[in-house]
Image (cartoon, rainbow, N blue to C red):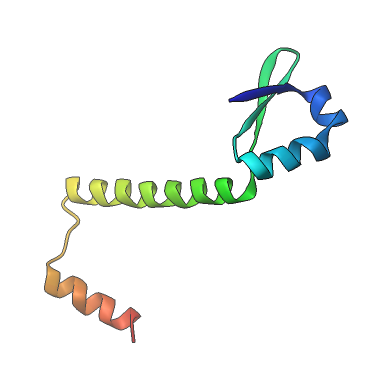
Length: 85
């Protein structure tokens, strides 16, 4: 992963954005020698957000199983039938 100073971002924002769009590799922005932010292209960011939502859904499902909050296949089908009409 590439690392750039915040001052480089200020001076070369257009160039960095063009490279980011082309290469789709995140850029770590540092300020005063410390990590400050990641610069990522829109498509990669949206993909990461979708993956996160999926993982959160799986985690909720696993918690429901652990807590015994389950229904039979027939009951699930009946409940979903109301939503899918």
